[in-house]
Length: 164
Image (cartoon, rainbow, N blue to C red; front, top):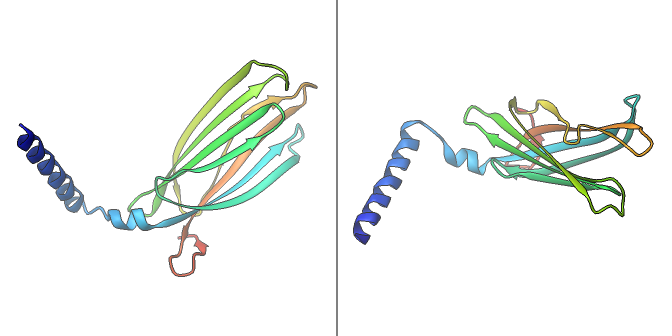
């Protein structure tokens, strides 16, 4: 029985390898291709004025998330941005946002919100993600948070990001 399971497993792996070869997928290209994820995070006020902003750039590979964690007095925002490189050099971008919100610093009640968005983009194309949505502070002031995301290819020779 043990030999039968091993034989079936080996046959399954060979079939997967043949499938990848027959479909023309260049998996080595995809798994070795570095991607630069640039994020511009902004908090906007009622008049769409920028109250706070942060720029960051992280290098990753296809399928590996870039995690951003922002902490405030009564809010924690976590965003996972995961680019998946396709063989035609387009990107399937997945953005997941989690928000933990309490009414005050001494409140034990925590509200949890989550958002998941995915879309196909071209290398270098900018997209905007709203992990927080709209929020109001204790004085009924309106705020929104936006993350501008841009994924670039990283040239292996000098590690500089470029649009393709």
